[in-house]
Image (cartoon, rainbow, N blue to C red):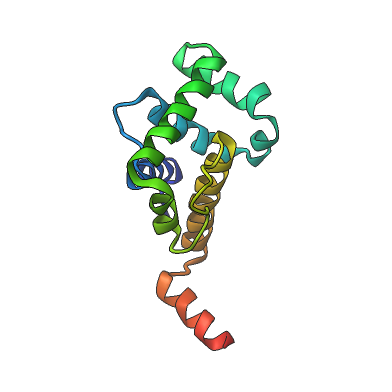
Length: 139
């Protein structure tokens, strides 16, 4: 059995670093918290400014606008560093086109969904090799 909280924190940290978000930015911590909150409660994506940012702001004792701006800045820095290739490489497919940078909620949603699906696969005992074999059997 996996420790879900540890896995979410570890995996979101590695994913954010991989797409180019520097760990020294405040937005890095806020993004990690936002991903964890969305995995816990996916409905938060429907109320990012009304519920998610205020919830994270209480944790860090800052204003919700600080959360929003710091996350936006972190995404900007990541895309200036690695461009869209950083996120596309993470997913092994084209998630974003070359002229499009995801919004705060889009990035949180896609990273949260990726981690959620990995957790579900582990809970079901599905490995990468198993899913590759399933794909081959379908063709």
